[in-house]
Image 1: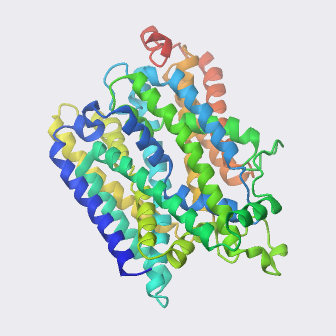
Image 2: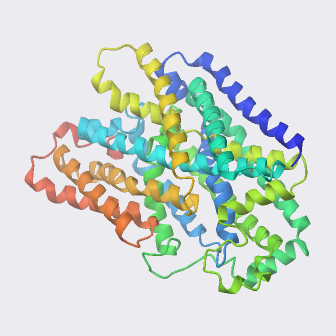
Length: 506
């Protein structure tokens, strides 16, 4: 990498910051700050969903999955579940989002069950989203560190990672603090084009630099079973199987895209359920295509670095990314060491683009509307807008702290982030399903069910070998079962609340 690459990266980070500041002139109310006054077009929301789903973790970790020893395309089985989950959300949940004026998805739970359920679900979202996005921030810092050490090989890697986490975190905070949700969405529209162009450019260079080009990569991919997509075995300890992908991936998407404020907030930025559904469904096709593309990049990296030529390769364990310490390090190394000047800076900027899908606005929206407002009744909207800005700053600092705390972990960042999110998404999705299908269940049995499900999921996470792809399904089923059983010991929910989450009542 050369000075031109650094200039491109610096210009991008500065541009993002200034873009957020420019949008600050439109942020006059909390509705503006959190929902863009509900005037954002559906196609921009679709691009935003794709950009949000394609984080830095995706950009870096997915190629590493295909590159690793015994790695293949079985990750796509999970994406099939993502597609199915989108259809279910469009039919089951989206109609209820547009019944009344919502700032957050958890306000639906208050209508259906009461304040305690809403606050528990909101608190779980705030905690786990900060942890998951702290991991994402770390991965972006790893890329920036690779850029810097390309210029200064003698630099201490850990020190540079720490400095990078702080730098990127500050840019993310400033951009979100001033720009609000509308700025986040429009920047993500631009970012989608940047990182798709960057990935395509990197793939073209890989093909040109590999001896034998595309044909060699295809032959090696076939020889080492890289293009294997389906695994129909039923093993709950395996992360990527057909059943874990389709069933587990469907439930995971129902939770992340249907009951998680981070993504639901984007639907709320439009004014009609049909437009929200169009945005969600069209994003699925793009997501599938780009995951295929990132896995192909992994195969190209495998052909380029040819780790199989090492005599010790055959004895390495499955999942090894030798000669690198982890799969997350492979693509950054190629970007910083082998891409031509200018293009290298563009691709690194693309990685930053993927990282700047900030969750801080969604976390602030949840914190203010679901956790703070119940204790600050009677305050005007100007007060809540001020608190929203303060909490954006606070949660940004928290994510920086999380990234610093987990930087020595050895697991794949993709695995870490998705397993963390899946841990609590099951109980939260479960209580939405309780509200939809078990109409007589009131607040006490629903609260008991969530607490039991959380406890069980903590046990599953830390004491069993069950793959994280099953977490949401397990958590949801436990919540449904416990709520149904506990409902026999309590009075039924009030009649006026029983249809609050039913799409049929729209």
